[in-house]
Image (spheres, rainbow, N blue to C red):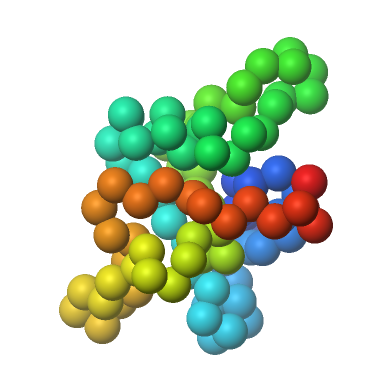
Length: 93
């Protein structure tokens, strides 16, 4: 099963087709940064009505970041250090 973007209602999945279109998927390893991602995404768990707590496998797709928040490293697109998701599209809410 492919990874799915954790942003609320974002339809993007980590598939070969999406990768070909230039979509990439990113995780936050640092605990403090993960908390900041949580607040930026503003996702509420429906059952508990509490703020979403991302698990170890949670990721966000590249559509939730601006192009200047990325860098190329060894031919791979990756997020710059300390970047917080800044594009939470109203069409996903």
